Length: 157
Image (cartoon, rainbow, N blue to C red; front, side, top):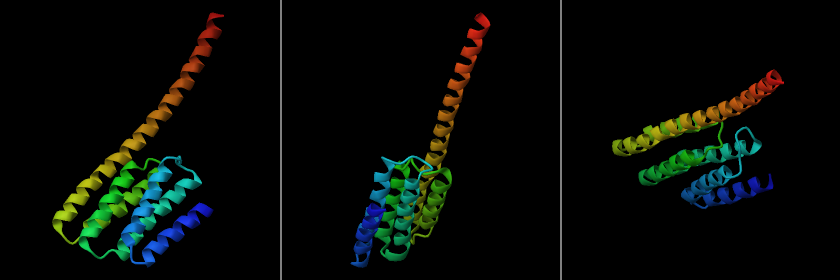
């Protein structure tokens, strides 16, 4: 709790002093650092989700320059692509919000470029879900294998 309050205080100071780009970067850096220590379904996942959503809120409220908006969205997309600790629901919410912000950029060229980057997020989310499902299948397969091994031993004896 103390670390989160400290982090939010630093970021809010950056934002109020007129450095929203730095505040967004700090929130996204927080998401990346959470990626190293968090597993899905924990309280820390919720903190990482708050960091990511706060970065998107700052993007929406504070950035007016088109170029800085494109840079911030690109950074958010790359961060979400690396963040593997979000649950499927949280990840999908962040990706959909990011894609909506991409579609609202003023220049068509920027919209296309950032939306194309967002397509990787949808594939990434699917890939993460598949990997988790495969891990679950492996664990189930190991349990079945151990069970059948026990059955074979009983039949032989």
